[in-house]
Image (tube, rainbow, N blue to C red; front, side):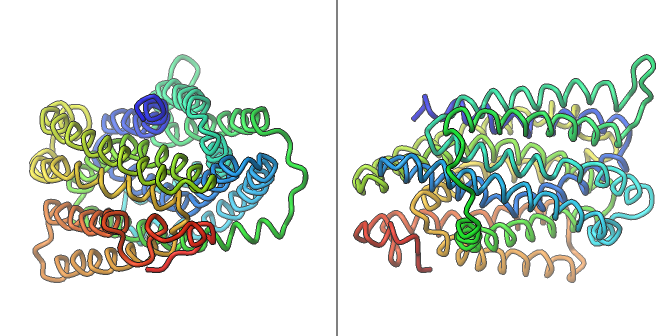
Length: 439
């Protein structure tokens, strides 16, 4: 588990670490630009996360094809996913560009913050197509249990982003200082390079697909329907939480952006166990070894929980450093209590994320959708109730966020142990291979 998980940890945290660098650089420009970065990144990452079924679905299909000894099926599934990803990326960029002013306003941004957010997002949309293509291609590689190639692609992409950040945000020699726009251009340039590298890598491992069947693309969309809805609900909550923090004031928005960026980084660390569990469980079920799938699920859960405890300790110990590095002076008064709540929630995050990966590997997408619907409905009600009561603070936003994650963790663990409903890990393999779950 450690040998497979470490490369995934390093590859997944490369992007949020780069986000932390962006945050540290932009924090030097003041609270309004930093709050704008928070609005821009959460909107764009939310739009891209909705399509994460391209990577998740591809990884599961390739892993199960590998377990069944049908490599050609996995190659074709990956080829369809890449073509679909390119088409969706272009459509996403075009539609989001038209809705840009409304989207920024809906996040509660005003004045200087809104103007900077519109600038940042307008540029970042150009990186949508390569981001989705990379997502699908890396899903195919991880389905083959190749965790190292995605690592090198992620490290190279994000290292380029950091170098370009330093040049474009503050300027150097003949290069003018572009501020928030420079951070956006740096990310777009590195994303296109990463997309090309991911395509070359997946073709080298799987080869050229025999054909790109549009019927298979429709099938992938059907498989991704529940994932799409689940991720949309997840994003809706995160957007409302960011909106709530931004509406409290620019200092709360800036502090929230710092906490959220670290939270995302820790989430990517814990997601490594989800990615490994997904591939191992999927391959075991493809070879009709449910006992092996349950063992992989247990090992991944224990490793993830231990890492969650370690992350909680590290966050509490690093509070002062994070505040000095990422939070403007005027925003530090609202930062501390919310930060501690986010830190103590890390073991809960660990259980929620790793069980997501287990259920992805079993294709139990419908159950995840229903669990997310209930959790998000209650979380959104709590956020809105706090706002309407007039007592909403950054601390209350993060308490609600932790409660939302905790409910997801309960549903995730219960589906595996003891196996609520028609769990694919408890029922006969014929059910698991049908690709359907029941919430």
